Length: 492
Image (cartoon, rainbow, N blue to C red; front, side, top):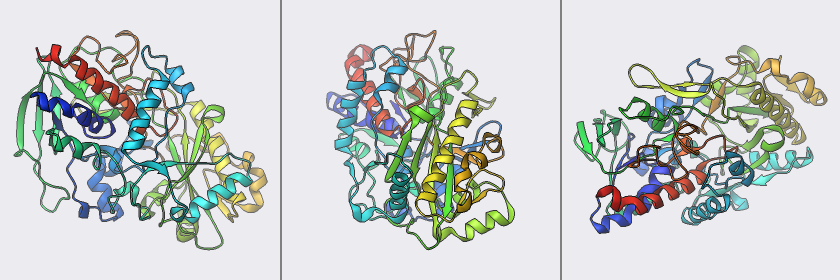
Protein backbone atom coordinates (compact mmCIF):
# COMPACT_ATOMS: atom_id res chain seq x y z
CA UNK A 1 0.00 0.00 0.00
CA UNK A 2 1.39 3.39 -1.02
CA UNK A 3 -0.28 6.55 0.29
CA UNK A 4 0.40 9.57 -1.93
CA UNK A 5 1.58 9.85 -5.53
CA UNK A 6 4.03 12.76 -5.61
CA UNK A 7 7.81 12.66 -5.83
CA UNK A 8 7.94 10.06 -3.06
CA UNK A 9 4.83 7.98 -3.69
CA UNK A 10 5.14 8.01 -7.47
CA UNK A 11 8.74 6.82 -7.23
CA UNK A 12 7.86 4.02 -4.80
CA UNK A 13 4.97 2.93 -7.03
CA UNK A 14 7.26 2.57 -10.03
CA UNK A 15 9.97 0.77 -8.08
CA UNK A 16 7.53 -1.70 -6.52
CA UNK A 17 5.83 -2.48 -9.84
CA UNK A 18 8.02 -5.59 -10.48
CA UNK A 19 6.38 -7.19 -7.42
CA UNK A 20 3.09 -7.35 -9.35
CA UNK A 21 4.59 -10.04 -11.59
CA UNK A 22 5.11 -12.12 -8.45
CA UNK A 23 1.47 -11.87 -7.48
CA UNK A 24 1.81 -8.97 -5.02
CA UNK A 25 -0.94 -6.36 -5.20
CA UNK A 26 0.47 -2.82 -5.17
CA UNK A 27 -2.14 -0.15 -4.51
CA UNK A 28 -1.61 3.65 -4.52
CA UNK A 29 -4.15 5.82 -2.70
CA UNK A 30 -4.10 9.50 -3.69
CA UNK A 31 -6.23 12.13 -1.95
CA UNK A 32 -6.40 14.41 -5.00
CA UNK A 33 -7.99 13.87 -8.41
CA UNK A 34 -6.54 12.69 -11.69
CA UNK A 35 -6.52 15.59 -14.14
CA UNK A 36 -6.93 15.36 -17.90
CA UNK A 37 -4.64 17.38 -20.15
CA UNK A 38 -7.36 19.87 -21.01
CA UNK A 39 -8.08 20.54 -17.32
CA UNK A 40 -4.98 22.76 -17.19
CA UNK A 41 -6.39 26.06 -18.41
CA UNK A 42 -3.75 28.38 -16.93
CA UNK A 43 -6.43 30.51 -15.23
CA UNK A 44 -4.89 31.52 -11.93
CA UNK A 45 -7.72 31.35 -9.41
CA UNK A 46 -9.41 28.42 -11.12
CA UNK A 47 -6.27 26.27 -11.14
CA UNK A 48 -5.12 27.27 -7.67
CA UNK A 49 -8.45 26.12 -6.26
CA UNK A 50 -8.32 22.85 -8.21
CA UNK A 51 -4.71 21.91 -7.53
CA UNK A 52 -3.66 23.22 -4.14
CA UNK A 53 -4.73 22.29 -0.66
CA UNK A 54 -7.08 25.06 0.55
CA UNK A 55 -6.61 26.80 -2.80
CA UNK A 56 -2.99 27.49 -1.86
CA UNK A 57 -4.06 29.34 1.29
CA UNK A 58 -3.16 26.79 3.99
CA UNK A 59 -1.88 28.89 6.91
CA UNK A 60 0.41 28.23 9.84
CA UNK A 61 -1.32 28.26 13.22
CA UNK A 62 -0.59 31.94 13.87
CA UNK A 63 -1.63 32.95 10.36
CA UNK A 64 1.71 34.54 9.47
CA UNK A 65 2.79 32.21 6.65
CA UNK A 66 1.08 30.48 3.73
CA UNK A 67 2.10 26.90 2.92
CA UNK A 68 1.58 25.71 -0.65
CA UNK A 69 1.22 22.03 -1.51
CA UNK A 70 -0.76 20.22 -4.16
CA UNK A 71 -3.44 17.58 -3.90
CA UNK A 72 -3.45 15.70 -7.20
CA UNK A 73 -2.38 12.60 -9.08
CA UNK A 74 1.34 13.35 -9.15
CA UNK A 75 1.29 15.46 -5.99
CA UNK A 76 3.33 18.63 -5.98
CA UNK A 77 5.34 17.49 -9.02
CA UNK A 78 2.31 18.73 -10.98
CA UNK A 79 2.72 22.33 -9.78
CA UNK A 80 6.40 22.94 -9.18
CA UNK A 81 8.68 24.41 -11.84
CA UNK A 82 10.75 21.29 -12.52
CA UNK A 83 13.98 22.55 -10.93
CA UNK A 84 16.15 19.53 -10.22
CA UNK A 85 19.22 19.88 -8.01
CA UNK A 86 21.12 17.20 -6.12
CA UNK A 87 21.61 17.53 -2.38
CA UNK A 88 24.80 19.30 -1.22
CA UNK A 89 27.30 16.94 0.41
CA UNK A 90 27.74 19.25 3.41
CA UNK A 91 23.99 19.15 4.15
CA UNK A 92 23.84 15.35 4.07
CA UNK A 93 26.90 15.18 6.33
CA UNK A 94 25.25 17.59 8.75
CA UNK A 95 22.14 15.40 8.88
CA UNK A 96 24.39 12.72 10.43
CA UNK A 97 21.99 9.85 9.74
CA UNK A 98 23.72 6.45 9.98
CA UNK A 99 23.39 4.68 6.62
CA UNK A 100 22.74 7.81 4.57
CA UNK A 101 25.67 8.44 2.26
CA UNK A 102 25.89 11.41 -0.08
CA UNK A 103 27.43 9.39 -2.91
CA UNK A 104 24.53 6.93 -2.74
CA UNK A 105 21.93 9.73 -2.85
CA UNK A 106 23.79 11.35 -5.72
CA UNK A 107 23.73 8.12 -7.73
CA UNK A 108 20.03 7.60 -7.08
CA UNK A 109 19.30 11.22 -7.99
CA UNK A 110 21.17 10.70 -11.27
CA UNK A 111 18.83 7.80 -12.05
CA UNK A 112 15.80 10.10 -11.88
CA UNK A 113 17.63 12.93 -13.61
CA UNK A 114 17.82 10.61 -16.61
CA UNK A 115 14.30 9.20 -16.28
CA UNK A 116 12.70 12.63 -16.05
CA UNK A 117 14.75 14.28 -18.80
CA UNK A 118 16.53 16.81 -16.57
CA UNK A 119 18.68 19.21 -18.57
CA UNK A 120 19.63 22.86 -19.04
CA UNK A 121 17.14 24.83 -21.10
CA UNK A 122 17.84 26.05 -24.60
CA UNK A 123 18.46 29.79 -25.01
CA UNK A 124 15.16 30.21 -26.89
CA UNK A 125 13.23 29.53 -23.67
CA UNK A 126 15.15 32.08 -21.59
CA UNK A 127 12.95 35.14 -21.16
CA UNK A 128 13.84 38.74 -20.27
CA UNK A 129 13.21 38.17 -16.57
CA UNK A 130 15.85 35.45 -16.50
CA UNK A 131 18.29 37.35 -18.69
CA UNK A 132 18.04 40.40 -16.44
CA UNK A 133 18.76 38.20 -13.41
CA UNK A 134 21.92 36.90 -15.08
CA UNK A 135 23.08 40.38 -16.12
CA UNK A 136 22.22 41.98 -12.80
CA UNK A 137 23.66 39.13 -10.76
CA UNK A 138 26.97 39.18 -12.57
CA UNK A 139 27.15 42.98 -12.54
CA UNK A 140 26.54 42.92 -8.79
CA UNK A 141 29.28 40.34 -8.26
CA UNK A 142 27.20 37.20 -7.65
CA UNK A 143 27.86 33.74 -9.05
CA UNK A 144 24.77 32.93 -11.13
CA UNK A 145 23.97 29.29 -11.94
CA UNK A 146 21.45 27.79 -14.36
CA UNK A 147 18.77 25.42 -13.08
CA UNK A 148 18.51 21.97 -14.66
CA UNK A 149 14.79 21.33 -15.24
CA UNK A 150 12.75 18.21 -16.02
CA UNK A 151 10.89 19.19 -19.17
CA UNK A 152 10.37 17.64 -22.57
CA UNK A 153 9.00 19.73 -25.41
CA UNK A 154 8.58 22.86 -23.27
CA UNK A 155 6.71 25.58 -25.18
CA UNK A 156 7.41 28.35 -22.67
CA UNK A 157 3.89 28.91 -21.36
CA UNK A 158 5.37 29.96 -17.98
CA UNK A 159 2.40 28.34 -16.22
CA UNK A 160 4.36 25.67 -14.33
CA UNK A 161 2.87 26.51 -10.92
CA UNK A 162 -0.65 26.01 -12.30
CA UNK A 163 0.12 22.68 -13.97
CA UNK A 164 1.76 22.50 -17.38
CA UNK A 165 -0.89 22.94 -20.12
CA UNK A 166 1.45 21.39 -22.71
CA UNK A 167 2.32 18.19 -20.84
CA UNK A 168 6.00 19.13 -20.96
CA UNK A 169 6.92 18.92 -17.29
CA UNK A 170 8.09 15.42 -16.42
CA UNK A 171 6.65 14.92 -12.95
CA UNK A 172 5.56 11.60 -11.51
CA UNK A 173 2.17 12.13 -13.19
CA UNK A 174 3.94 11.93 -16.57
CA UNK A 175 6.70 9.40 -15.91
CA UNK A 176 6.68 7.15 -12.84
CA UNK A 177 2.94 6.70 -12.26
CA UNK A 178 2.03 5.77 -15.87
CA UNK A 179 4.91 3.26 -15.90
CA UNK A 180 3.68 1.78 -12.64
CA UNK A 181 0.11 1.50 -13.90
CA UNK A 182 1.22 -0.14 -17.14
CA UNK A 183 2.99 -2.75 -15.00
CA UNK A 184 -0.16 -3.50 -13.01
CA UNK A 185 0.00 -1.10 -10.06
CA UNK A 186 -3.48 0.17 -9.12
CA UNK A 187 -4.01 3.88 -8.44
CA UNK A 188 -7.15 5.15 -6.73
CA UNK A 189 -7.64 8.91 -6.71
CA UNK A 190 -9.88 11.06 -4.49
CA UNK A 191 -9.05 8.49 -1.78
CA UNK A 192 -8.08 10.03 1.56
CA UNK A 193 -6.59 7.75 4.20
CA UNK A 194 -8.01 8.94 7.49
CA UNK A 195 -6.10 6.67 9.86
CA UNK A 196 -3.97 3.54 10.08
CA UNK A 197 -4.44 1.01 12.87
CA UNK A 198 -1.94 -1.32 14.49
CA UNK A 199 -3.43 -4.33 12.71
CA UNK A 200 -2.46 -2.67 9.37
CA UNK A 201 -5.98 -1.60 8.48
CA UNK A 202 -6.49 1.69 6.64
CA UNK A 203 -9.69 3.69 6.96
CA UNK A 204 -10.18 5.28 3.54
CA UNK A 205 -12.78 7.78 2.39
CA UNK A 206 -13.34 8.07 -1.35
CA UNK A 207 -14.90 11.39 -2.30
CA UNK A 208 -17.43 12.01 -5.01
CA UNK A 209 -16.52 14.37 -7.82
CA UNK A 210 -18.50 17.56 -7.32
CA UNK A 211 -20.60 18.77 -10.30
CA UNK A 212 -18.44 20.95 -12.53
CA UNK A 213 -15.23 20.15 -10.65
CA UNK A 214 -12.00 19.50 -12.52
CA UNK A 215 -10.53 16.03 -12.63
CA UNK A 216 -11.89 12.56 -13.22
CA UNK A 217 -14.14 10.66 -10.80
CA UNK A 218 -12.41 8.19 -8.52
CA UNK A 219 -11.65 4.69 -9.75
CA UNK A 220 -13.68 3.43 -6.75
CA UNK A 221 -17.27 4.28 -5.88
CA UNK A 222 -17.58 7.09 -3.35
CA UNK A 223 -17.83 5.88 0.25
CA UNK A 224 -15.87 4.63 3.25
CA UNK A 225 -13.59 1.61 2.98
CA UNK A 226 -11.49 -0.47 5.36
CA UNK A 227 -8.43 -1.74 3.51
CA UNK A 228 -6.09 -4.40 4.89
CA UNK A 229 -2.39 -4.11 4.03
CA UNK A 230 0.78 -6.08 4.70
CA UNK A 231 3.16 -3.17 4.06
CA UNK A 232 2.26 0.51 4.17
CA UNK A 233 4.43 3.23 2.60
CA UNK A 234 3.25 6.72 3.56
CA UNK A 235 4.24 9.43 1.08
CA UNK A 236 1.65 12.16 1.52
CA UNK A 237 4.16 14.98 1.92
CA UNK A 238 5.53 16.50 5.11
CA UNK A 239 2.14 17.72 6.32
CA UNK A 240 0.01 14.88 4.97
CA UNK A 241 2.22 12.04 6.18
CA UNK A 242 2.91 13.50 9.60
CA UNK A 243 -0.71 14.40 10.34
CA UNK A 244 -1.87 10.93 9.22
CA UNK A 245 0.53 9.20 11.58
CA UNK A 246 -0.37 11.58 14.42
CA UNK A 247 -4.08 10.80 14.15
CA UNK A 248 -3.58 7.06 13.70
CA UNK A 249 -3.82 4.52 16.51
CA UNK A 250 -0.14 3.64 16.41
CA UNK A 251 2.71 3.64 18.92
CA UNK A 252 4.62 6.67 17.64
CA UNK A 253 8.16 7.85 18.43
CA UNK A 254 8.01 10.99 20.56
CA UNK A 255 9.73 13.08 17.88
CA UNK A 256 6.82 12.59 15.46
CA UNK A 257 5.82 16.01 14.13
CA UNK A 258 9.02 17.76 15.14
CA UNK A 259 11.78 19.10 12.89
CA UNK A 260 9.54 20.96 10.44
CA UNK A 261 11.36 23.32 8.06
CA UNK A 262 10.08 25.05 4.93
CA UNK A 263 12.35 27.71 3.32
CA UNK A 264 10.23 30.81 4.12
CA UNK A 265 9.98 32.76 0.89
CA UNK A 266 9.32 36.29 -0.34
CA UNK A 267 8.36 37.41 -3.83
CA UNK A 268 10.39 40.53 -4.65
CA UNK A 269 9.81 42.76 -7.67
CA UNK A 270 11.41 45.71 -9.41
CA UNK A 271 10.09 48.09 -12.06
CA UNK A 272 11.99 48.56 -15.32
CA UNK A 273 11.58 51.44 -17.78
CA UNK A 274 10.02 49.26 -20.48
CA UNK A 275 8.07 45.98 -20.80
CA UNK A 276 9.94 42.74 -20.14
CA UNK A 277 8.93 39.18 -21.01
CA UNK A 278 8.09 37.16 -17.95
CA UNK A 279 4.87 35.38 -18.86
CA UNK A 280 6.53 33.53 -21.75
CA UNK A 281 9.51 31.20 -21.55
CA UNK A 282 10.39 29.01 -18.60
CA UNK A 283 9.87 30.98 -15.37
CA UNK A 284 12.69 29.58 -13.25
CA UNK A 285 15.99 29.17 -15.05
CA UNK A 286 18.71 30.72 -12.82
CA UNK A 287 19.65 30.99 -9.17
CA UNK A 288 22.19 32.39 -6.73
CA UNK A 289 23.06 30.07 -3.83
CA UNK A 290 24.26 31.77 -0.64
CA UNK A 291 22.70 29.16 1.66
CA UNK A 292 25.93 28.23 3.39
CA UNK A 293 27.36 31.73 3.79
CA UNK A 294 24.28 33.93 4.30
CA UNK A 295 21.27 31.60 4.69
CA UNK A 296 19.46 32.51 1.46
CA UNK A 297 18.92 31.37 -2.12
CA UNK A 298 17.62 33.65 -4.89
CA UNK A 299 15.72 32.21 -7.86
CA UNK A 300 14.13 33.69 -10.94
CA UNK A 301 10.37 33.35 -10.92
CA UNK A 302 7.09 34.41 -12.48
CA UNK A 303 3.95 34.74 -10.42
CA UNK A 304 0.51 35.70 -11.57
CA UNK A 305 -1.27 38.97 -10.73
CA UNK A 306 -3.28 37.73 -7.73
CA UNK A 307 -0.36 35.92 -6.08
CA UNK A 308 1.94 38.87 -6.79
CA UNK A 309 -0.53 41.36 -5.35
CA UNK A 310 -1.08 39.43 -2.13
CA UNK A 311 2.65 38.83 -1.71
CA UNK A 312 3.87 42.42 -1.90
CA UNK A 313 4.46 44.49 1.22
CA UNK A 314 2.12 47.35 2.07
CA UNK A 315 -1.23 48.68 0.95
CA UNK A 316 -2.72 51.68 -0.79
CA UNK A 317 -1.09 53.94 -3.33
CA UNK A 318 2.39 52.41 -3.40
CA UNK A 319 0.92 48.92 -3.78
CA UNK A 320 -1.38 50.03 -6.59
CA UNK A 321 1.46 51.84 -8.31
CA UNK A 322 3.71 48.80 -8.48
CA UNK A 323 0.85 46.51 -9.61
CA UNK A 324 -0.01 48.91 -12.45
CA UNK A 325 3.58 48.38 -13.60
CA UNK A 326 3.05 44.59 -13.81
CA UNK A 327 4.17 44.27 -17.48
CA UNK A 328 7.46 45.95 -16.53
CA UNK A 329 8.20 43.95 -13.39
CA UNK A 330 11.28 41.81 -12.90
CA UNK A 331 10.71 39.15 -10.22
CA UNK A 332 13.00 37.26 -7.87
CA UNK A 333 11.98 34.60 -5.36
CA UNK A 334 13.92 34.73 -2.09
CA UNK A 335 14.19 31.52 -0.08
CA UNK A 336 15.51 31.78 3.48
CA UNK A 337 17.33 28.65 4.65
CA UNK A 338 15.80 27.82 8.01
CA UNK A 339 16.80 25.00 10.35
CA UNK A 340 14.88 22.67 12.62
CA UNK A 341 14.01 24.09 16.04
CA UNK A 342 12.11 22.49 18.94
CA UNK A 343 9.07 24.75 18.54
CA UNK A 344 8.52 24.38 14.79
CA UNK A 345 6.39 21.29 14.36
CA UNK A 346 3.33 19.68 12.81
CA UNK A 347 0.41 18.72 15.05
CA UNK A 348 -3.26 17.84 14.62
CA UNK A 349 -6.37 19.41 16.10
CA UNK A 350 -9.21 17.51 17.78
CA UNK A 351 -10.69 16.67 14.40
CA UNK A 352 -7.37 15.27 13.18
CA UNK A 353 -6.68 18.16 10.81
CA UNK A 354 -3.05 19.27 10.43
CA UNK A 355 -1.86 22.32 12.36
CA UNK A 356 1.59 23.73 11.64
CA UNK A 357 3.34 25.61 14.43
CA UNK A 358 6.07 27.79 12.96
CA UNK A 359 7.96 30.84 14.14
CA UNK A 360 10.65 32.52 12.10
CA UNK A 361 13.89 32.54 14.09
CA UNK A 362 16.24 35.55 14.22
CA UNK A 363 18.68 33.57 12.07
CA UNK A 364 16.01 33.02 9.41
CA UNK A 365 15.04 36.71 9.54
CA UNK A 366 18.70 37.51 8.96
CA UNK A 367 18.61 35.29 5.85
CA UNK A 368 15.52 37.13 4.61
CA UNK A 369 17.15 40.52 5.18
CA UNK A 370 20.42 39.55 3.52
CA UNK A 371 18.58 37.95 0.61
CA UNK A 372 16.36 40.99 0.08
CA UNK A 373 19.40 43.27 -0.02
CA UNK A 374 21.09 40.94 -2.52
CA UNK A 375 17.98 40.82 -4.71
CA UNK A 376 17.77 44.64 -4.66
CA UNK A 377 21.42 44.88 -5.75
CA UNK A 378 20.69 42.52 -8.64
CA UNK A 379 17.58 44.46 -9.64
CA UNK A 380 19.42 47.78 -9.74
CA UNK A 381 22.46 46.27 -11.47
CA UNK A 382 20.06 45.01 -14.15
CA UNK A 383 18.73 48.52 -14.78
CA UNK A 384 15.61 48.67 -12.59
CA UNK A 385 14.16 52.12 -11.83
CA UNK A 386 12.94 51.10 -8.39
CA UNK A 387 12.57 48.08 -6.16
CA UNK A 388 9.58 47.03 -4.07
CA UNK A 389 10.73 45.41 -0.81
CA UNK A 390 9.92 45.24 2.92
CA UNK A 391 11.00 48.77 3.83
CA UNK A 392 9.44 52.09 4.81
CA UNK A 393 8.37 53.23 2.29
CA UNK A 394 8.41 49.94 0.34
CA UNK A 395 9.42 51.55 -2.96
CA UNK A 396 13.19 52.05 -3.10
CA UNK A 397 14.32 54.35 -5.90
CA UNK A 398 17.52 53.79 -7.88
CA UNK A 399 18.95 56.91 -6.20
CA UNK A 400 18.88 54.95 -2.92
CA UNK A 401 20.71 51.91 -4.34
CA UNK A 402 23.74 52.77 -2.21
CA UNK A 403 21.68 52.80 1.02
CA UNK A 404 20.20 49.29 0.92
CA UNK A 405 21.70 48.21 4.25
CA UNK A 406 20.05 51.24 5.82
CA UNK A 407 16.70 50.89 4.04
CA UNK A 408 16.27 47.10 4.38
CA UNK A 409 16.56 46.08 8.04
CA UNK A 410 15.19 43.37 10.31
CA UNK A 411 12.57 45.68 11.84
CA UNK A 412 10.60 45.49 8.56
CA UNK A 413 10.46 41.67 8.68
CA UNK A 414 8.19 41.16 11.70
CA UNK A 415 5.82 38.14 11.43
CA UNK A 416 2.43 39.27 10.21
CA UNK A 417 3.76 42.47 8.67
CA UNK A 418 4.74 40.90 5.35
CA UNK A 419 3.43 38.10 3.15
CA UNK A 420 5.69 35.08 3.66
CA UNK A 421 4.96 31.80 1.89
CA UNK A 422 6.64 28.42 1.63
CA UNK A 423 6.43 25.45 -0.74
CA UNK A 424 9.43 23.32 0.29
CA UNK A 425 7.79 21.58 3.25
CA UNK A 426 10.17 19.23 5.05
CA UNK A 427 10.45 17.24 8.26
CA UNK A 428 8.02 15.80 10.78
CA UNK A 429 9.08 12.15 10.39
CA UNK A 430 12.83 12.65 10.46
CA UNK A 431 15.37 9.89 9.95
CA UNK A 432 17.91 9.17 12.68
CA UNK A 433 19.59 6.69 14.97
CA UNK A 434 16.68 5.39 16.99
CA UNK A 435 13.25 6.05 18.52
CA UNK A 436 14.77 8.45 21.04
CA UNK A 437 15.85 10.96 18.40
CA UNK A 438 13.89 10.21 15.23
CA UNK A 439 10.81 8.64 13.66
CA UNK A 440 12.43 6.36 11.07
CA UNK A 441 15.74 4.76 10.25
CA UNK A 442 17.71 5.55 7.08
CA UNK A 443 15.49 3.21 5.03
CA UNK A 444 12.29 4.98 6.05
CA UNK A 445 11.19 2.24 8.47
CA UNK A 446 9.22 3.68 11.39
CA UNK A 447 10.93 2.60 14.61
CA UNK A 448 9.10 -0.32 16.19
CA UNK A 449 6.79 -0.84 13.18
CA UNK A 450 8.70 -2.75 10.48
CA UNK A 451 5.62 -2.87 8.19
CA UNK A 452 5.27 0.94 8.15
CA UNK A 453 7.55 3.05 5.94
CA UNK A 454 7.82 6.76 5.09
CA UNK A 455 8.99 7.99 1.67
CA UNK A 456 8.78 11.77 1.26
CA UNK A 457 10.26 15.07 2.46
CA UNK A 458 9.01 14.44 5.99
CA UNK A 459 12.09 12.17 6.31
CA UNK A 460 14.46 15.15 6.22
CA UNK A 461 15.92 15.67 9.72
CA UNK A 462 16.73 19.28 8.81
CA UNK A 463 16.42 21.70 5.92
CA UNK A 464 17.89 20.58 2.61
CA UNK A 465 18.68 24.23 1.69
CA UNK A 466 17.79 23.61 -1.98
CA UNK A 467 14.75 22.53 -4.01
CA UNK A 468 13.98 19.06 -2.58
CA UNK A 469 12.42 17.20 -5.54
CA UNK A 470 15.36 14.98 -6.58
CA UNK A 471 16.37 14.20 -2.99
CA UNK A 472 12.84 13.03 -2.20
CA UNK A 473 13.00 10.68 -5.19
CA UNK A 474 16.42 9.39 -4.14
CA UNK A 475 15.21 8.61 -0.61
CA UNK A 476 12.01 7.05 -1.97
CA UNK A 477 14.17 4.85 -4.19
CA UNK A 478 15.93 3.61 -1.03
CA UNK A 479 12.60 2.99 0.69
CA UNK A 480 11.36 0.93 -2.27
CA UNK A 481 14.59 -1.06 -2.31
CA UNK A 482 14.11 -1.92 1.37
CA UNK A 483 10.49 -2.95 0.76
CA UNK A 484 11.58 -5.30 -2.03
CA UNK A 485 14.22 -6.71 0.31
CA UNK A 486 11.77 -7.23 3.18
CA UNK A 487 8.60 -8.13 1.30
CA UNK A 488 8.83 -11.90 1.71
CA UNK A 489 9.20 -11.67 5.49
CA UNK A 490 6.45 -9.08 5.86
CA UNK A 491 3.99 -10.95 3.64
CA UNK A 492 4.65 -14.16 5.53
